Amino acid sequence: MNHGFYLWMSYGATAIAMAVELAILLARRARAKRMIEEERDLEAQD
Amino acid sequence: MASTYFRYSSPASFYPAARRLAPWFGVAAAVLAVAGLAVGLVVAPTDAQQGDAYRIIFIHVPAAWMSMFIYLVMAFWSVLALGYNTRLSAMMAQALAPTGALMTFIALWTGAFWGRPTWGTYWAWDARMTSELVLLFLYFGFIALANAFEDPRRGDRAAALLALIGLVNLPIIYFSVHWWNTLHQGSTVKLTGTSMHVAMLTGMLLMAFAFWMYSIGAALTRVRSIILERERRARWARSL
Image (tube, rainbow over the protein chains, first blue to last red):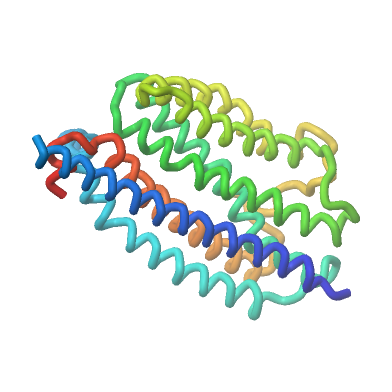
């Protein structure tokens, strides 16, 4: 019996889900860094 | 020892430590995953009854273990956050929750694709599957509560309380296959031993360690962002 479909759907979805989490982590990191830069700019204006 | 713990309980001290540690956990996860996949997909023999569909075990079981273990660790940090009002504890709990939800989703998803060829159905309202689904909703609830308040400290407390209440679900998940007559099979790997082929067990344990390392790496990376978001007005954060 060929179980390729079930294996691909499991391994493929796991890989995609982890890749999405890593992309979200990087995006959040970039946003956090931007927030720090904004704070620095505000401090410089004061 | 105690002084080291208290030093790293400060976000300012923990931030650089997390930055140094996170990549190493990422590398360990990648190496273990390559080894685990090689053993699981190439070396391990085909199962006599389930055929190759059983190879889903190499992601399903580690993800299910991690979904429960991460919740336990999240609850531990929540206890510290509630009991000692430590900022970093609440941040750690919130850094773990999305990865815990991801592991729970993977366990449910791969379980469905394992169930179809072996049981004939993607889903059944079986005690093990239903309690695992409740775990996913607990993670979603924790994340939603933590972000529902303008004052993050109020969100920390509300989410920590939910994490503690949800702890009751962990023994239900674990013992469900013993307490009820379930479609889901009982534990194959026990502290007393296993009936699994050594190559199958090796592949599964390697993947379990890979998922563990991945989860630590992801949580450390996320907690760094949370620290920056919350401490952005602190002098140390602006000087980074």
